[in-house]
Image (cartoon, rainbow, N blue to C red; front, side):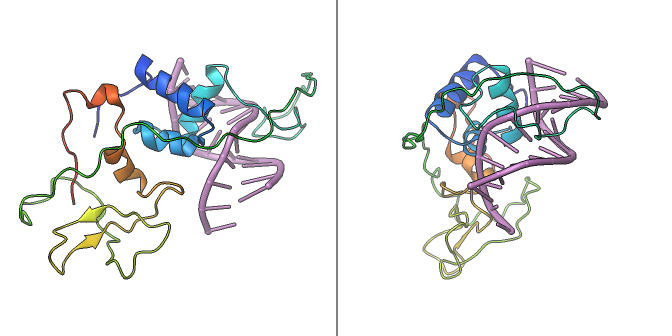
Length: 177
DNA sequence: CCCTGATTCGC
DNA sequence: GCGAATCAGG
């Protein structure tokens, strides 16, 4: 899909802002698009704005070297208690206009069209991305697992939330359906 | 089960 | 530098 997206200044800026606003890595990743939460966390650490945090060098943490050696010292740093209230996020681009009258054209996107539910089966934690013509009985919602806190799944969140910078010219409404 | 960030290490 | 895999924990 989107090619050449990487840690451009714009993306790093957005990352910084969202991280400092207390957004979680997964939400940030969804809004940036094209990256996973792991990528976000990795970047955050590389940028040196890792977090505020837990106790400390708890002897046990993520994968450590096979073994061998164990030093490192750290003093309990002040912890910033209370995360700020998540603020409004970037540009929310409501679904582009509805697709041509049920354009029966072939799908060029190999998207797993598995879920898809009616409003009756739509429940919290399900992607609310509209699919089809809402005036017809065939209307459905994506229904895939939505990012908690956001109304869409990772795929549709990328379409809904587009970094202002990249949305400039090359904005092609990818995948609708 | 859902989620969170932290760390290591192969690329 | 990057981020998947993995870990510890809520």
